[in-house]
Amino acid sequence: MVQLFEIQETPLVLDEVVQKVVRRECGAIATFIGTVRELTHGKRTLKLEYQAYKPMAIKMLEQIGKEVEEKWPGATVAITHRVGTLDITDIAVIIAVSTPHRKAAYEANEYAMERIKQIVPIWKKEFWEDGTKWIGDQLEKTPYPEGVPNLGGKKND
Image (cartoon, rainbow, N blue to C red; front, side, top):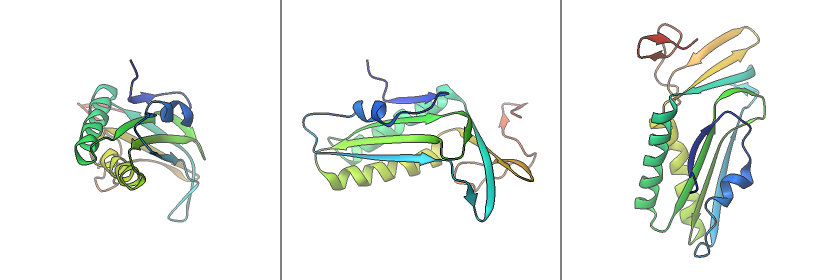
């Protein structure tokens, strides 16, 4: 059985994710590849660390898949997110969406990425030349007052 939604610790491979959504009835596959960038608001990033509560993260990715299928009938989505330490240019996430027509594939792919940032419990730690910081939620709107995510009372740092 094909696992459409995964959290993995090894480098991501685009073709492996795309092959999960290839279907004869679809005329379009849109992909999104999220990579680690070096500069954010002029600040140099050296590397990132992602951590996830995997069972819940996968459940939320599955929910996104259901939402996509409801909003764009005939769509199939596969999402793989990487956790662990990532260097600059490493791939952090791949989303592949197949649909009968191209416009729906573009729209569904963008929707999936925004929903990942909204609901999937994945945390990011940024390493800069002058320090480190856990970034709040993926929308970067919820700070961590203690500097680290609270995972049920135990610190994650």
